[in-house]
Length: 278
Image (cartoon, helix red, strand yellow):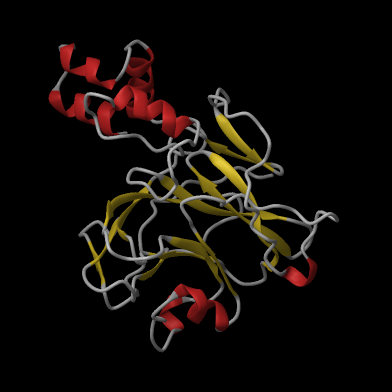
């Protein structure tokens, strides 16, 4: 498969009425209520290109969490942005949205391995019977695609127990709805004119949550900042060669016990901040 060319990801200027974007259009906050938080990617996604967000802020008192998926509707052509991605946007057709839950986000395949009629497979009540292991591969592989794993895994805010929490993120032990979790959507071509949609949670592929999605139209990412999820920010993923900034960060992080040890190093404060938070 051809290499994915990185584009700077932003949210579209068309979004739900309760959404406020920051000046960079990389952070979306729902400012009131629990609905009208639907956002779109500024540009259509390419095959194998992930749209990745991190949960920045939660709001107690609501039932439900982030929803994410794809739509073939150009946001500029919508008369109005639907109040909900599920069911409103999906009921418009040509949209596929997955509701993230605290547990049970793994897709369990039917016995035949394919969902009929392009419908979403069932979401099982149990994760696959595989032991949780630390990720050692540099890339996440889905079908014939590879996505750099470096930015896929959520990281805790630096603090007394950050080195312990980071390991829990790496093994996908913490709830995917927790703050700092990173959730993305990507589509993988499956034959001529179709693709499967995959949801990635903290570096782990949840499986094909929607199958046989037509690719004859551009596909935009959908992020619904819904209910208990109050604020998300886009995480930029680098494909191909890493930037010098990223290489420096990796080298520094490789030689420290955990992120709190950065405070003991004689490094510029901006560099310390970058290594801690990215």
